[in-house]
Length: 285
View (cartoon, helix red, strand yellow):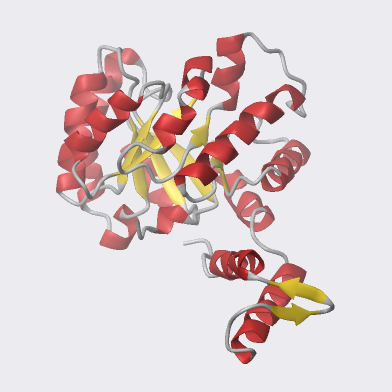
């Protein structure tokens, strides 16, 4: 799937019932903006928020709409069916790129959502529970799934964890998402939120952990998180210089295996170099 969201490093949440914030969220430079019908909207406001999305999005330029996702309410909630119908209409009109499905636990639900939004709609399952983790390979392989995302706080609540700031207990969970992503051939997964948006050091540590762990993006809850997360998840100047040298060496040799700085450069090394250069071509919007 060719979408700017495939290599986006930041996904900023914005409440669905605050339409005046939707364009402002896109203007932060976030790679993707998630308009939230779930946690950010009180039950009595969900219907009106849903009904107002079309009017909010129609005034946006097409390029901006390609960065828009809507997080609907989870399957089994009173709002899910109406949400699914609404996002299907929004995708059909070209007003959003796709949908974030919270509490994703069953591939059948993802397939049903994929059928509703049609082949142009992108899907991001949010893994937030033990059941979702158990089904992660099936979820990753479901139709139209662009990337997996991790709901770290909800996952802790679901399984009864009480993690410290380093979330060491979640290392195997994050690895499972990364491996499922690789097996399904998806772009790098999206890590969860840093809840205290004012804690700059915690955000930096969380983002560094995400990058070490193979995650290519992070969910953000405040505009101030966007720029530092985008920078921290991107390649460094040294990495880019190395990647350019790798690509140049392979081109000069006419393809195949070459030696650079005494090390063999084969197809996997070349793919890594090309990925780093592709990430550098994804500046904040």
